[in-house]
Each structure stands twice: as structure tokens, then as C-alpha cells.
Amino acid sequence: MRLWPVILDLAFLALVHGFQIPFQERESGYNFTTLSLSALSSDSFTVLEHPHFKDHSVRIRKTASEFCDPSVASYTGYIDTSAARHIFFYFFESRSSPETDDVILWTNGGPGCSSSLGLFMELGPCRIDDGNGTKVNPHSWNENANIFFIDQPIGVGFSYADYGETVFTTEEAAQDIAAFVAIFFETFSQFKGRPFHLSGESYGGRYLPVFGAAIWDQNVHLVAAGLEPINLKSLLIGNGVTDEFRMIPSYYEMQCTPASVDPVLDISSCITMKTALPRCQKWLKESCLDSFDTISCSAAYSFCSTHLMAPLEATGRNPYDISKPCEDRSALCYPVTKYIRDYLNDPETRKLLGVSPALENVTFSSCNMAVGAGFRSNMDIIRGHTPYYLENLLDRGIKVLIYVGTYDWICNWVGNEAMVDALEWHGASDFKDQKLKAWSTIKGQEVSSPAGKVKSSGGLTFLTIEGAGHMVPYDKPAEALEMVTRWVHGGSF
Image (cartoon, rainbow, N blue to C red; front, top):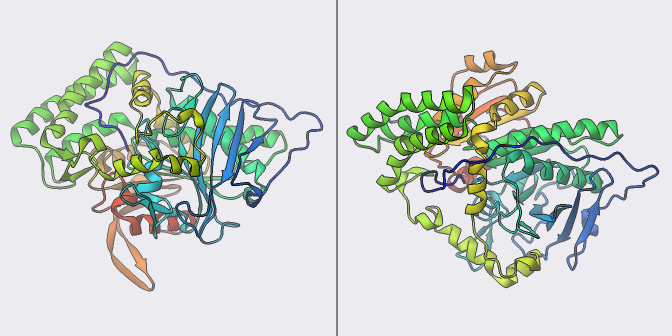
């Protein structure tokens, strides 16, 4: 979930720092121990360390059988860093063939929102049941895959730092994710070589390309050290924000034309918006793209926010589903997020999950506003050049699925289609020649009505889900499950 831009702090101050994954050569004669997940205890954490990642370790434990979905094994733990930072994660084995099925990592967006939203509201093995417990989700993405849910970066969900520090750029966050993935696959040998997919939504459109690049570059070092690389196969980005410069202009089309639903603004407001659009684009290009000036770029973004984004808030519409009103802005327009909060603040739930005692007096919140403000102050999305990461991954054979619910406004299909069409990679020409066509779900031998539209060429696929909002698995769970199942198994749409 991407946080509503108008009500957030837009004071951009700091610069984005470069990153490099810490990597040490193997100690001479070191005999690394591998484990089986089935050997893990539910009473205490097992600590995983690796000589190549001396700045990182992993704590993991099996959860009690009554958690979430009793039919599958599940685990929780922390990625610990030498900088006294701790990233919380869940891991669920596949309902089908955990010993052979692919592995998926899921992250929510924000920036600053917990992946517990994805787990308990969208695609996890269970969904929240009015805050008192959970119920099994028949459309979970672990139906045919093993799956992680990660609370990242530091400060999100049950992740924390001993001394309060966190990271405020995606490049910094990528260091921890890449190291964790390597330690996990190296330790639990049954997953070595297994196809691995990075997935997420919203600000995940910024996170995932950078995470994928970090894992790819790290693989070079793993191979040089005689270790097996991570078998990164694809990225799945749902309603993502990858190219802010193409997303911002799309807000006019989403509010003033029938691109999704009938126009939601009056004609006078739309004329004001259209008049402001060229100035917005010119100012962003000159101050944020052609050359970067912190003060001028901040002013340009503020101008665009005021004239292109703020009008929707006045309508009372849900920015994550423009077809309906926002039920409760304090709950991100979805009251179910309050049920998730109550469930995860229950002491018994925390004990079940192995949440650190350091968080005993800290209230769980769906989104950490301080983390989001830190990323904005670093202008992470503006300065990140995220499409370049996607282009480089595509040129190295990593497949990319961009899927979008048509009712989402904040990270909409218009801006995402403009983004994929503008990518410069070896298959760009063939991709741009493709036309959108209908895709349908299949039940048994019967094809149902169209679920949305799709175009695909080479390693890139752009797909819409008709009638879904920002959180596709929440609005269209059956369609979302079929989509991800086809994707990881190499099927077509």
C-alpha cells in the first residue's frame, strides 16, 4: 500500500547514498553447516550465520501448529545485522509440494507499511477474522509456492533497531534483503537452486527492481566463492510505483476521463488540472531529471501534488479504489487494517510469533509514518532511477510481470503502462508492437469471462485485473491466484 501523498511530509532534505553488499571471502577450511526446516524448534530460535556475511545473521523458529493455517508448516524470525537492526519475517511452506515448489518473497509498500497487510488481508494462508483470530484463505499464494512475508525496512511492523536507527533509501534496504536470501538458501539446502521470485505491491515497484539487482550482483560473488547462486527468476510488481515521472501525469486521466470509472471531478477542476499538467511535467524534468536541485525538485513535486493529487482527496473517494468512497482514512480506507492491528497487538499472538521482547511496549501499526517520511526526505523514489534497474534485469533474462487493478488511482494502470512502454531494453521494440488483449481465468476445462487485459513479449508482461483496486489479491483473490500460478509455472495469458 502506498501512503497517501498529500497528507504526508514533503520536506525533501538529504541525498541518496550508493550501496554495496557486504561480502567477505570464505575463511580457509570453514565447514558450513546446512539444516532442514523440519529440524527447527518451536520453543526457541535457531541462529544461522555464514562466513561470507559477517554483518548479518538469521534467527528462525517454527510456529505452533494452531497459527494461521494448520495444514502447512510455518516459521517466523529476524534478520539481524551488526548495526543492531532486526528485520522480522514470516515463512510458509507450500500447500502442494514444498519440497519442489518455487519460493516467493513478498513485501508491501508505503514506504513503511508492514507485509502483515499482505499476509492477513490479501494473499497469505489465512485472513484476519474481525481481530479475534484468523481463517484459512483458500486463495493463498502458497497454494503452489513457498512464501516469505518481510517487514522491511527497519522500523516497519515487528522490525526494530536497538538504538532507533533505520535506513531511508531502497539501496540501503537491499543490502539486508540480499544477505538474508543468501543465508537462507545456503543454510536450508533443500531450497538450493529453487526458482526464486520477488513480489510485492505499491512502493514495491521501487523496492523490487533494486532488490533484484542486489541479488544478481551478489550472485557474481557467490559463484566466485564456489557457492551456488540464488536462482532469481522473476519480479512480480502489483500496482507499483516505479516511474514517478510517468505516474504523476496519469492522475489527470484517472480523474477526468473514463480511463477507469466515469470522471470523478467536475469540469472546472479538470480544466485547472490540465492547465497545471504541462508546468508540472516541465518543472519535474528540469529540476529532478535533467539536473537535480533539492529545493527546486521539492517545490516541483509539491506543486504537482497540490494540483494533480489533492483534488481527489476533496471528493472523499478511496485513492486505492476510485470506484468507492474511503470508509475510514485513519484505517487507510479499509477497516480490516484495524482488525489486523488488534490481532498483532494481542500478547498471545506476539508470543505465538516470537516477537522480540524489545517491542513489548511498542504498539503495532500497519504503516510507520516516520519511515515513510525518511524515504521522502531522501527523495528515494524521485532520485532512484528505478526503471534503469528493471531494464538491466530484463537484459539479463530476469522476467518481469507488472500487474495492475484497474480501479486503483494512486498507482494506476495508465501510469504503469506508460512506464513499461518507455523501458529501454533489448526487447523494447517487440513489446511496444504488442496490443492489449483479453485474458481469462480457467475453471476445469471452461474459460470464464475475461479477467482483464494483457500484453507480453520477451521477458516483460503487463497485465490488468478488471474491477480490482490497489490490492489485487484482496479484491480479486481467485484471479490473483491464477495469475501468480500461471506466472511461476511459465504459463501464458
